[in-house]
Amino acid sequence: MNRNRLDAVQIDAALAELPGWQRVEGRDALGKTYRFADFNAAFGWMARVALMAERLDHHPEWANVYSRVDVVLATHDAGGVTAFDVALARFMESAV
Image: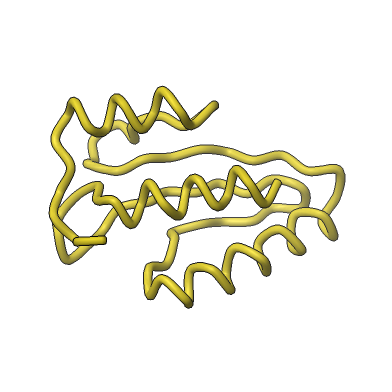
C-alpha cells in the first residue's frame, strides 16, 4: 500500500463498499459513527481495531462515549484519504 492520496473517483468507489461511511464535511477524510450494545462492546471493538491500526502504522481519530464510537480516517502526511484509510475502514467493518 502506498500513502498517495486517492482521487474523488477512487474515494467514491471505496465508499460504495463501506456502508454508513461518508466524506467528512470540510476535510479530505472519511467518517462513520458506530453504535454498540454497551461500553464493553464498544471498547472491545476499539481494542481489536487498535491492534490492526498498530500493525498498519496507521491510526484513527476517534472518540468514544459509552456505546458510541465516532471515527475519522485521513492520512495526515498525505493530506487526505489514502489506501490505508480504506483498508482500516474495511477492517473496522469486518470487526463489528
